[in-house]
Length: 316
Ligand SMILES: [Zn+2]
Image (cartoon, rainbow, N blue to C red; front, side, top):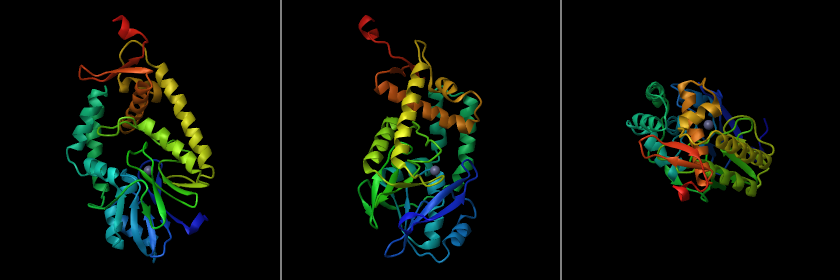
């Protein structure tokens, strides 16, 4: 496939859906900038040696700390001897989640406070520990931030799918990572230690994409996006509808994020998928609280939500 500006794409397999992830090679005067590294499967170094051939990698850039993007960073850094750059906020979350043995327990306890049954949270701890060996991030990378430049590309913050996610833009080409995907709706979840309003962040990031007016977006999964501005508008509309639906599930009786996730995503999810469903539900519930369309109560150790009732406070 012919990509703009002489960009090359390398696709590596994922053991879970969507089954693949894209990395991109951006040409530059001193060699290629490699964007993202795929997951750190045991043969990552051999796969990358074969994919890169004789391409000279001058630097590696990580868009966000999710396993399918950061996982093989240390392998590729060792293979190419290229320095790794990663966003400042993103790297702090990367260390918090992947460099911290306490994290699986922490996240399980957090899900318990949102009403997730214990058999699901216990399975999450187990599966979290299975995943960890496949995430080999590069310690002490060069830290970069929104507005910085990387070999002629501008870094653009796109919080939402991940708080610290950075995209790259040049000549109206957007390397969008998981901020903008073609057929898949990027997950936007609330997580412990995450920014308080990921869905609000995401909608603002989409508006910023519309202002940037890229002509093509190169995503982390799926085909290049020929109409990134149209896609951004569609995603804003999608979340507007999901917010309305989430609001419609609330009433006078307190409901947890887990309860509401059963209405939004159905009851038949495996624990790994339920985790994303609850996190996504919570990002919508928190946005509704901020828009004064829902109320949160968390004073008995379990966080619950009710419909906003105008005048309730005044009459109480
Ligand atoms: Zn991804």
